[in-house]
Length: 252
Image (cartoon, rainbow, N blue to C red; front, side, top):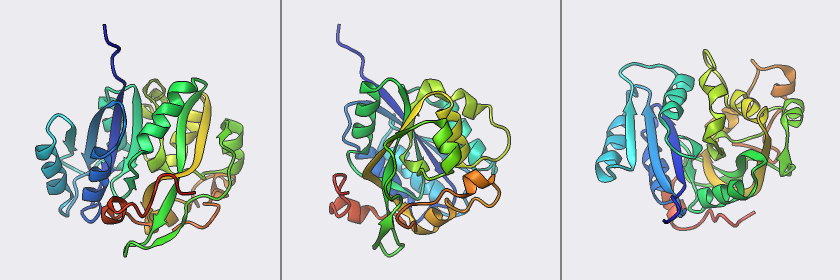
């Protein structure tokens, strides 16, 4: 009897990402990974063309792209919780609707998690790109490749949420969160269940304005507020540059 294939649930959170969501979804559909995918896309009652673009992808890729259209705005955290609650995969991958992945991103991370059972989640570096498509910076500088909860609490948030892949069995603490939360809270809850891995290789491209926002944690405790991208953070995502191979997964 043949072994069953791994299944990965990609959870894409979107709100008014009309300029970016097409690139985002194209990068997921184009992943070169030996696993079955389900792509859950939650639109939080966008007022631009985001919903129409998601619907177009769902029509083009039936059974692969699954839209979740909320009739009213429920907020980013609840939007994400709804998606991971529906996820049927062995692994859950997080992606914001204005970021996009490089082609081998999932293959590299799933391969690592399959071989390293002590790690519950894996993250990666990112290329930060301006709205004009220009390469601006790396999201992170030098970091340890494996760390625990104590290190994360001491250093604050230095991880890119759109790079995250984790074991689906670890989702329950995230589902139990009440109210709004930052990505950092998700990282902390995952680190409480096992080791985290960070890959220095860039695996995605992220939006400049949001990359800057992701490092503004005035509302967090001081330990969290110290987190910042090591090499300067700032990016946006253009699939044209991804398709031309200008951001290669092997670049460091």
